[in-house]
Length: 115
Length: 110
Image 1: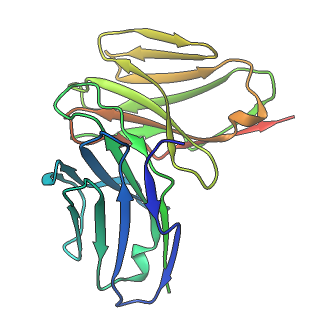
Image 2: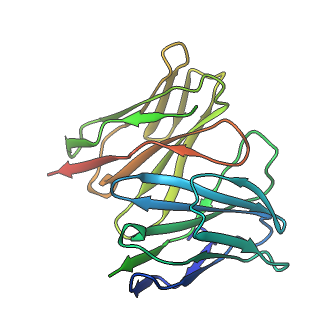
């Protein structure tokens, strides 16, 4: 158990809908990362938050957004869903970015299926 | 930019050694990582190596780094059925993200 929790574990929805994925980082970790794992794209970095502020963006679509709350949990919002958004979404957390060694602890993932 | 490549599949007999290879393109990578993903689970960090090291050994795991060729390998000694999983090579250049390879599916056969 990495200490990172994600809910829900599975999510099935229809095209055009909006969903919210939730992540709670390990106790004490200030940084949260979101990744998307799909068959065709592999594991792709989406976005990072550090202590409530957006720190870096990767291959995140404009239809997707995220935030990190004062209690450090994070939510990833996916809107106007398309079939191609079906994937496993991972959240990871780490203690302190800004140091070279950046061990990220991954949650179990949320499997999103868009029908 | 970052680009990490690894072979997609490896089949190995129980008790033999497994070697998983990875190449990366960003010469400014500071740390390189090996993650393991078991079915239905998240990624678990197995080991990492700092870019100024050539080798790191951790029990059954040996990581070799050839910085000149930008080649990284993971050797698992005495491979067991519990080692069946997908293994991801990843590099970090900045502090904010990991760039992953596509993953190598290791199948251990009896």
